[in-house]
Amino acid sequence: MADVSFLSWPFLEDRHRALAEGLEAWCAAHLPVDHGDVDTACKGLVADLGAGGWLQHSGGALDVRTLCLIRETLARHDGLADFAFAMQGLGMGAVSLFGTAEQRAWLERTRAGTATAGFALTESASGSDVAATSTTAERVQGGWVLNGEKTWISNGGIADVYVVFARTGEAPGAKGLSAFLMPADVAGLVVEERLEVIAPHPLATLRLQDVHLPEGALIGATGEGFKIAMSVLDVFRSTVGAAALGFARRALDEALARVKARRIQGQALAEMQMVQGRLADMALKIDAAALLVYRAAWVKDQGAARVTREAAMAKLYATEAAQEVIDIAVQLHGGDGVRAGSVVERLYREIRALRIYEGASDVQRIIIARAVLGG
Image (cartoon, rainbow, N blue to C red; front, side, top):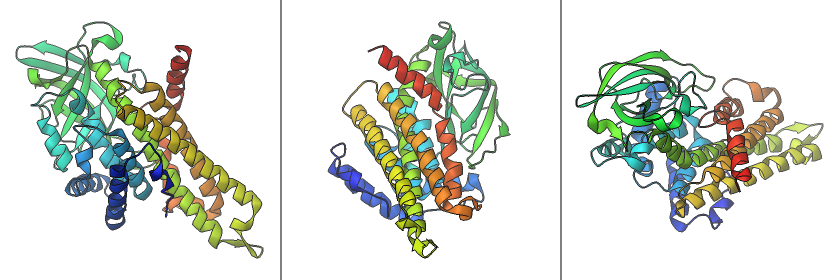
């Protein structure tokens, strides 16, 4: 059983503790799921999470501490369940924060689990440099025409709706981007390629060929796309750290069970001082990550307009620490740690991507350094 003492920290309220208890029971009854067909598994998880009421927290009024608790708990039980929940929130984050009443009608479906969301920001030449986006949106009579390519798009190929970012040209660089709500069945949207990764998730490259969208598809105002994207990431970046935290907690649980049961030269691994030192390192990194994650979430929930520095610290430290914690768990399992299909082997594959997406670790270091230098 994972350590839940953090639930008593002052960052959290009784409603968060009640939610964590209820979700833990739901996870025990529903997770993990069969990952054999990833597309089917993700669609099924979205439906089940919606039926359980958990997706109600993924859109609309966003409580970041709740998002973090849900992602941490789901990740501890099943990384694909965390992915399914996270993309409903991230995919519709722009609509939750800036959408019109008409656009927000989509939230009823994504929160119910009857529609799957995608966030189409990344391009092959503009991964960490959003300002270099080249996809274009040209204003025409009655709306917009979009052309370009997006890649590494989560839920690409299975989403029912995407938020897509394109250059409308009000100014060079970041100031010339806008955000649009794009149904997946629109003419001209092509799934160019499905992308395979070490921890299977539905990912794709999308091509937009003269995609016509109505005027009402514009989210916010023209030229506000970069601000919208950064505002969404400001909310959800901390939750990436929370997912990493869930992976790390599961790794510690698996390591503890292993070292208590495994005996070498007449004594349990847990009795060896060297092993105890490794366990101490794991516990220390987990608590430090949890403090940073829930600090960032609490600051945002208190009404801070931006938590860029706090979220970057949480995301950077929690993902890097989780990688180290999981590596220790693999080492303590010996040969069984690299056996395909084992829990720690799966965690080893799952954690790696979190150090890249929603801002790679070195990008987070740049963000933190600029905040420190700027006072």
